[in-house]
Structures are given as structure tokens and as C-alpha cells.
Amino acid sequence: MTTPAALAATHALAFTDQRPWSADEFADLMDQFGVAVIGDAHSFILTRTIAGEAEILTLATAPAHQRKGLARNHLKTLLEQRLDRVFLEVAVNNVPAIALYTAAGFQIIGRRRHYYHLTSGEMVDAQVMAWAPKP
Image (tube, rainbow, N blue to C red):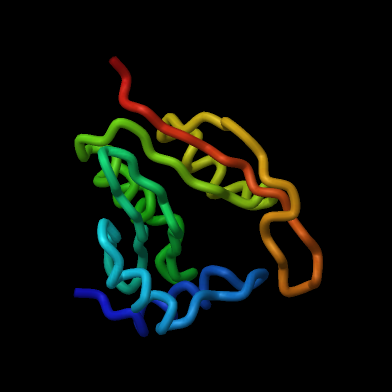
């Protein structure tokens, strides 16, 4: 199993313009009902699934492991589960993540103004995206 400390280290490498999550925050989340990690310390998705709906809490890949299809494979693993819908928020300036989610079939369903606080002090909106299996 991937440890909270390992996840926090990868998160810190992947999220340089936002406050990364701490090992304690990962530990607290991982202790919650329905929370799961797909992947490993190099690349992972942290999800919460309840009653057939999942939320992607975070997705991170260490820079040395990016552009290898790891995140795409983790996302595919999640979407192959029997889920009714999957939701997420993504910063509007995170173009690679938006491209990943769009290619996987996610649709923009909303926007949260000033959702992310960047380390520069800037506030960035989040796109709310959702995926549902095709009938």
C-alpha cells in the first residue's frame, strides 16, 4: 500500500503553484469511508466513492514520471468500475489535466469562482467536470 507520506511527497512535486497536501491530510482522507488510492507513489488518483458516485479528490504524478500515460491508466481503471457518475474540480489554468479529463469523456458542468488559492496569491476558478458511462 502507498503511504500517506509518499503520496504527500508526490503531491508536493506535482503541485508547485498550490499548497500541497500534507501526509496528515492524506492519512485523514485515507481513513474515511469510500476513499481509495489508484496507483502508487509515483502517480496516483485519490477518490471517494459513495452510492455509485465517485469524486476525484486529487490526481498527481511526479514530474519524472509524467507523459508516460500513468495518470491516463489510473483514470481508465477508475472509469472501468461500475459507477453512475464521476465528478472532479480542476483549475482552469491546468491545461494538461483538462485535456486528460476531456479525452476520457468528462464534460464541464459548472464553474467555482476563486476556488484555488495559488502560492502567488492569485485566485483561480475551478471547472467542475462530470463523467457518466455511455448507455
